Image 1 (cartoon, rainbow, N blue to C red):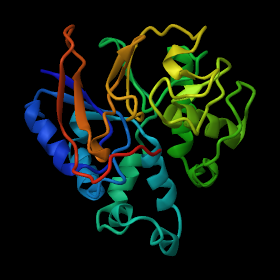
Image 2 (image 1 turned 135 degrees about the vertical axis):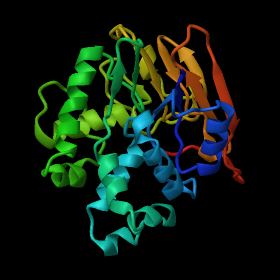
Image 3 (image 1 turned 180 degrees about the vertical axis):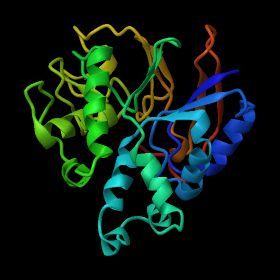
Amino acid sequence: MAIWAIGDLQGCYGPTQRLLEKIRFDPAQDRLWFCGDLVNRGGESLETLRLVHSLREHCEVVLGNHDLSLLAISERSPDDQRKVNPDLQRILFAEDREPLIEWLRHRPLLHSDRALGWMMIHAGMAPKWTTAHAEKHAREVEHRLRSDSRRKLLRNMYGDYPPWSPALRGVERERAIINIFTRLRYCSPRGRIAFNEKGAPGTQAPGLYPWYEVPGRCERDLKIVCGHWSTLGLFIGHGVHAIDTGAVWGGKLTALQLDTDELRIVQVQGREVATPGEQD
């Protein structure tokens, strides 16, 4: 048996298949943890989502910003849905759209396994959040996404404000939680997110820190595996294992084995692109 965490797929179906072959994934005994952003930009988002959905009994998935964007678009009118990129349109107008979207909507923002000693998120955690805080705040948003009132949240989740505060309520609180879990790279010591900073460490403005290096941050009782930050590349430090290595931008697709004391990483080449880049 093996448990593998896999970085952002972003609609890269071919690399996903090759990686599963390279780690010799056996659904009869192995499990997969997907770090979010299953869809968008790779050109094969429908196939990728179908593949992960077909493995749903054998995997854990957390929501990334692109997954949430798909959920938000799925609540709009067909005319509005036709305005998004063709990669997402293929999901939105697929004959099996409903079971795929419904399954995705019920994925968590955070998955933890204390027996294993790991937790998985897409992007980051606020400096003052303990593991217990993060689990509590994730459940708040997940409850709303799975309820009949989800449309209000999905209509209003976009925006860079307000910064996180325990005093926030309603949609503003939920938006702040979503931004931390799915968009965070750099922040100030007080936890204010620098949304426009997307480069590798060392390129950020003075006074900003990678979320896992903020002075005075909480120590967590679980190791963290995450994705989202392709310009960071493969990073291991401070109890964090960041494994988005830019498959959609021509980099690598990475798997990290979680159920071993050895550092075991497997990679395959991502999709072919003319010019690698970095986007949200």
